[in-house]
Image 1: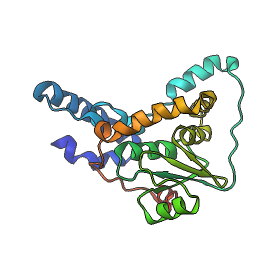
Image 2: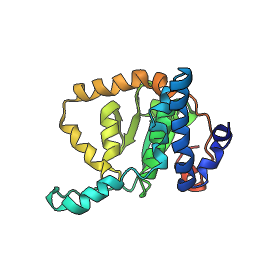
Image 3: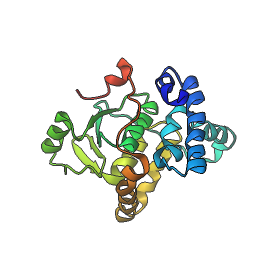
Image 4: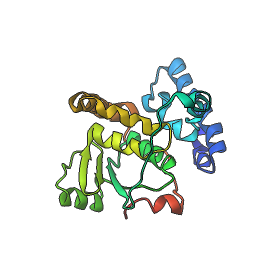
Length: 209
């Protein structure tokens, strides 16, 4: 009960979030082992990843072995790209927060597909109104499914921009994996967040109102 009621404290700062996320994750596993009740989107731990500096292991490896890695340069267009996402999907909400935390240049803006702006953009660019795919609008072009994900990754800070190398794989193979995850996202991660985050003005400005 303390952890559930104390959830709003997790948005104070990252340190408090970590101290809340770890016991909350363990609590849900304890409920599973003791009572047999499964909370798959909590037990997976993915919902709690934004509270952790997941890049630290990569920075440690890059510091020691960076001289062996190919050099790449990430460029950012002046005009922001727009990411349209499923606004009722927990996994999509976590993904948006993940992108924001790793996009210090502010290259991306966001809108839910269900919103008025989202529907207007879909119609303007003749993109499918399909909740099962993330939509990226960049430089007047529309990207869907795995192509959208990889182009988003291309603009994120290291090491995440390295994921763009997967673009060399056949689109049919990449999209098959994407659609498999998309089909199960509600079952695995749920549809509504238990706690509504109060975004800072800086984060709020990244969303199309």
